Structure formats: C-alpha cells, structure tokens
Length: 302
Length: 222
Ligand SMILES: Nc1ncnc2c1ncn2[C@@H]1O[C@H](COP(=O)(O)OP(=O)(O)O)[C@@H](O)[C@H]1O
Ligand SMILES: [Mg+2]
Image 1 (cartoon, each protein chain N blue to C red):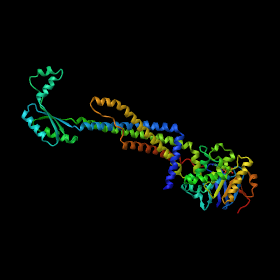
Image 2: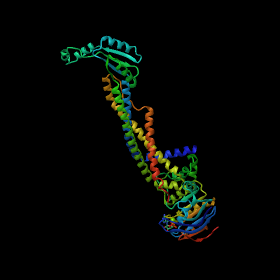
Image 3: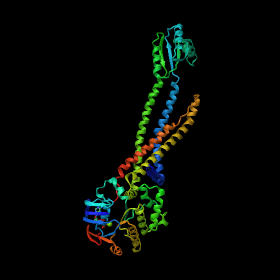
Image 4: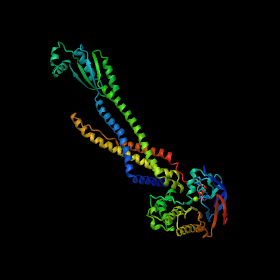
C-alpha cells in the first residue's frame, strides 16, 4: 500500500514536472479544452436556470372557466360556490360579464365598437387557482369543469408551460449532444498531446525500460498528465462559465427589476461543478490511455 | 552465473551475428569480451538482459532461462543487472543526481532511503561533487562514470558494459576499467566488451575473443 502510494506520488510528480516544463503548451491545451467544455456547461447552466424560472410560473397554475352566454347568474353563483368548496382549489376570482364589458369599453380604441353592440357578447368567467401545480392534476380539474352544463370553455394556462418544458427537453438533448461531440474533441486533443510527449520522451522511456521499469511505471506519468490537463481544462471551463454568467447577470438584473423580480442566473451547483471537473479529468485520462496504448508499446530498447 | 549453450543469433533481415556459441561466466568472475567490430560482442551482451533473444540455444542468467521469459518478467530480470552502454544513455534533462536516482525510483525505493545510496554510488565513481551538474557539462570519461554509478546503484550481482572506453583517452579508459575491477573485487560478476585488445591485456583477467560470431579464444575458461 505504501509502495503503491509512493509509486503514484512519483508518477504525479513526474507529470507535474512535464506539465510545468511545457507550461505554455500545457496551458494552451487546457484553454482549448476549457473553451470547448464551457459551451455545453453554459448550455446546461442556462437550461437549469430556465427550468427554475418556469417552475416559478407553474407554481401558480391557473384555469380560466368561461360560462355559456345564456347561463344565468344563478348558474354562475352555483358554480362559484362549488369551486370555493373544492379542496383542490386554492382561490377563485369571479369576473361578471358586465365587468368584462366595462373593462373592454375602457380599453383604448374599443369604446365605439362596444357602443355599437346592442347586446353583451361576453360570458361570466372564473379564474381558478389550483393547489396542485402538476399539469395532470390541472387537466383533470379542467375536464371535470368542462362537463358542467353551464360551462362553455375551460382554458388551462399551463399549456404554454408544458410546451416550454418540451422545448427544455429538446434543449437538454442538444446540450448532451454538444457535450458528447466536444468530449470527443477533448479526447483527441489529449491523445495528441500525449503522443507528442511520448515521442519527445522516447529516450527516457527506452532507458527506463532498460533499467527495469515496468510498463505501468512508464505509463503512469502520461496518465496523470492527461488527467491533469483535462482537470485544468475543466477548471478553466468553470471559470469561463462563471465569468460569462456574471457578465450576463448585469443585464438580467436590470431586466428582472423591470418585472419586479430579483431573478439572477445561477452558477452550477457544487456537485455539478465537481461533475464537470471529474468529466473533463476522465476524458483527459481516456485520451492519454488511448495514446499510451497505441504508441508506448512500439518503444522498446535496442 | 551466466551461461550460453550453443547460442545462435540471426537478425531478421540481417546476417548471422552468433554461431553456436557456448560460454560460461562464473559468479564473481571478471571477463573481457574482445574481437573486431562486427564480431558479435554487443549481440552477446544484449542476450543477457533479453534486449535481443537468441534464435536458438539457451541463455541462462542466475538460474533463469532469459530467452523464455515473458515480456512482463523482463523488468525484474533487468533490475538485477547493471548495464553500461557505449553511448551512456543518460538523461540530459535532469541532474547527475537524478540520473542515479532513476533506477531506485523504478524499483520503488522511498526517496529517503534512495538518496544516501545514490550519493554513495556517485562517490564510488568520484562524481559526488558534481551531483547538481547536468550530464551535458561532464567530460566523456565523467559521463561514462555516471553511467556506471547508475548501473551499480541498485547493487546488482552482475555488471555488463558494452565498449565503456570507446571514445576515451587512454588515461580515462584506464580509470573506467579500474572501477570495474574494484566492483569485481567486492564480488560483482563483471562482463566488459571492448575492441581494444591492448587495453585489456594490461589486466591479468579472462579474455574471451570472438571472431565472426564464433569463439576464437578463451584465455581462462573456468
Ligand atoms: N539490429 C541489427 N540488425 C541487423 N543486424 C545487426 C543488428 N545488430 C547487429 N547486427 C549485425 O550483427 C553482427 C554483429 O554485430 P555486433 O554484435 O554489434 O558486433 P560488435 O559489437 O562486436 O561490433 C554484425 O554483422 C552486425 O552488422
Ligand atoms: Mg558493439
């Protein structure tokens, strides 16, 4: 165990030395990886923020219930009483057809149109807030209300939220595809870095094998180098994302304030940031692994 | 300690380097292998750490048939051998000291335990004062002594050197051979290949002369 730790410490030290020795090239590689990973990470963060935003809206799920025009006020009162006693309903707001017409008349430019009407075409209406924000619960309530004879129509205002959710799913798929694609690019970048490292260290590899180095001993520093480069790229990606969100938030804050909201774009949660780092480190390791498997065996002492 | 039985070696696409050679080196012995260029000296030495494998015949080193060893077993064979090459094969991107530390790191020694051994090895070849230098700053003779320090730092029971005095003036060459003699005096089996017959005749030691891949002379077969 102690020997195992010692060998790994030695390999990590060697990898750090190689990273430092080619400082500029190492940092440029990490930057390429960082920029590439910042794209899907940014997409992911924006989607998570959008989802949080839509959840705020669907937390206030509303149904609008329109009565038949020929329904009487007694019908409306009966439905109102029924809704208020329903346990699934949080609140009910009634808008009478007279109030609706008055509102329409006061709407700029429509006064003359309304005056020309010799009857009120608007129905009584209820705006119903449900306790359960789930689309399925809303739909069930809406279906029940549609079956009431005096009800003409029920609008579920969460329909747009459902459409947005579908769009978010699509967005998530796009981010996943982007991450997969750029992940392959990351593996390729590391593969090539390690290939060059192996070629420039040909003598060292040959000599090490001559004086009794096992394959594992020779490989390990290259694995660590790939891992380090990937992790450095992941760290840069997180930094780029953080800076980009901070810059965007200046504008977002203004916009949100105009709507009376304190909404801000949030950074990745700690577990997500850790996952980004682990993902990039693992891809770096994979690139190194593939490169080492392909090129290291060819180097044998002569 | 080392025995060759009817060993032949033909390089793929090349000529026949060794023809049915039989030779035994006893433990604690020092032997010089001489012969003209192309006689097969380097090939003979390369069979011992299994850098090359015999086409036929067997090579036994410390009881192991090295020709039959699996690839994964080679590192452990090589850790028990000290190898010195004509071109030194030093690492020029690190210090003299780090060059000598490499075999100890490879065999998994803790740095605390390895450091005094590395210094002792450098001291034996007279390079302790240069431990911080880069090998490129050393003279040819000093570089060869550094290669010897690296070869002996793991305290191998067998020391093998291929043309360690090539490109050296007579004085440096004598110094190098004296170092090999001193290691042999403390019990290390030493095998040195050189084309410089005049040099080795100054030492009253066993001389094995090869000619065109065959044994031409063996002054003191045990
Ligand atoms: N890697 C190789 N491939 C093909 N032929 C080789 C190789 N190494 C050595 N030879 C040939 O084997 C013969 C013996 O070479 P070598 O063992 O190097 O002799 P020496 O060390 O005595 O000069 C020579 O004819 C040489 O050309
Ligand atoms: Mg030779």
